[in-house]
Image 1: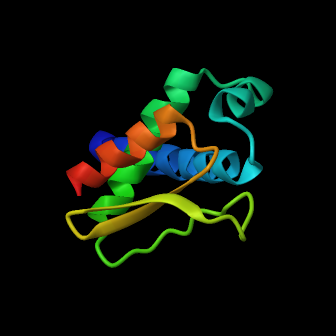
Image 2: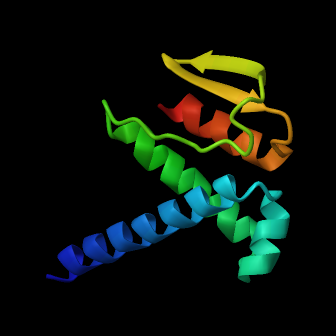
Length: 107
């Protein structure tokens, strides 16, 4: 029973943080600014972002759209690791890029 409760709690936390990551990434703000506005410690955000990305990699066949701040903006880099492709756009901060690459490497 306790194990089931922990699993449900973990899934709920992951869902909450997946929404927070989506909100941050679609806000157009740098992560640190978004975190400051939302009362979140940046290190906590990045730790959960990594968990969210890792969870998305483990769900094969699942596609996650990451909204862009400017849809007409051209990618400045395109990276493919283990069959997973990512485009990096101008304005992406170093910590976000690092987290994405780490998540991709674990897929």
